[in-house]
Length: 167
Figure: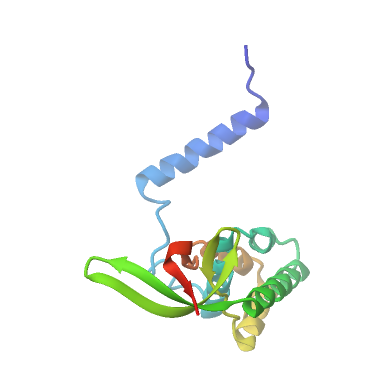
């Protein structure tokens, strides 16, 4: 006989609520029209964080999703920039071949190998974007949470070993 803990009941209640929202269409993927009210600096930081989402390096995204203070935001962005720099330095130029209905298409792109897949190399945001993002987060930490959430909408493309040919 199994018993359901109070914590499990709360989880089940919350899951049911979100499932109903999803079913009703409220929880669909974020469309461009829904993000129009989001500051461009927040969008740019989200696009940058999309690399970490693709690479399944969730620490910096999690830190931004749950900041306790402005210092947490600065620390998370600093960590993300430092990690991105390491990946950028190890990036390779590769010829990517994609199979399409009309044949194969080949293009060159900088990629990094993370675990068993290749991901488009991260692109650092402009310093002015980072400054603006910090300004916004100093006013309200919700901007950091929005950036963390949108990171999954701006996830970087990944490529298999078969698609990547090293230069």
